[in-house]
Length: 498
Image 1 (cartoon, rainbow, N blue to C red):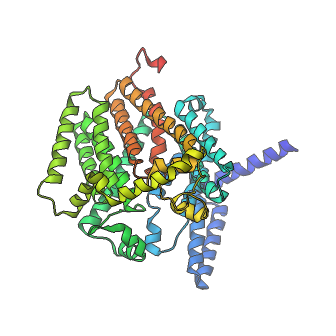
Image 2: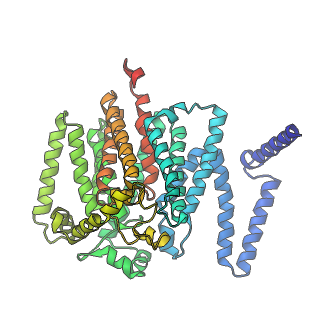
Image 3: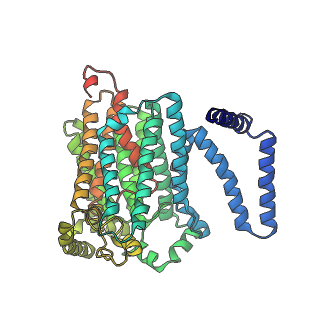
């Protein structure tokens, strides 16, 4: 009975594949589906339900996207990245909050099943994936997230479930990357896509600064008084490009700008060097328009980190001197009345800054709670998330204003220790790859990625730098690249010991 059912199922699937993929819907089945969609659209429009017509249209397109993701996982992989890049635009254009975040997660799962099918068909061995130190510490980290569901301090599991669902989709994307980026060309194509998308985001932000906002962007900004107060500070309207807010825009541009600049400076190909340096400068320029002081700190930390990691190279000293000279001329030269420069100078004020003093005060008050709760207060119990999901929690009124403080408060010092171990393993893998690699292209990619990750760790001191779209879909693939890229280096006698 089961054998007959299996034969019947396989025949049906084979027939559907022939109708949809081979014949590209140019068949009686395809004509029937398209006719049904057309009738549904016409009916919805005739009765005046424009929203219904749009929903039907999106559902029809969604069917084809799902089929494409299952048949061509690489297409679906890049589609997820591109959709996540423009996730904030629909709300600003039509003022209708669409669940694009959920759409991205659903597409990720569809791609995941397509990748699993590819793994099964090609009998891909994933033993290396599970043995790698980065994968091991990630599994430990996600196991700890599961334990947090039983944290007695947590008042609502709904907030935890939203966090865990999102993190699980990132872990799944990490696994997808391992199976899809299976050769050197695909890895460097991915890095090129990252730089390209970042440059597009940067140019949009530069346009906002030089030519002003689009009309729909202005409507979106001034539709919320709290948003206006957040964006307009010290006489300067902070830019955000197509991302969610100026802070996220500044963090993303500063880290990616340094990454691109390092690749450009170290490139051995003149054309690539020029293009990457220009792209890096434009991306860093756009970060200054965000008015995010953390972004300025991250740029300085990136240059300093690069200097430490490559202190044995002759060009490093020249780069450090050039950066110090340029920064000094910018901050203390004839640009004092420029609001962008004024915002950058406020980064150097330190304890003179009122917001920094408030942060120190809040951190001091929450320390006794952290020490007495090794598991923390629970996931999504601080800041805006805490007020939404755990409004009566002790931490609900505490604004962490730092990635590290958020981890400490919500996951306790045990969760914090796991995160620190994770960061150590990641940086260690990057530096080991840099010093072991022989080929210049591999070596340059390693140091650029390592500095990028180091910058994010520095940014966590005063900002939550990871977890948003689209850069989470670049962050997790970089973790895979860190331990796969060395496999494409020039074979050496030490290769077997790597």
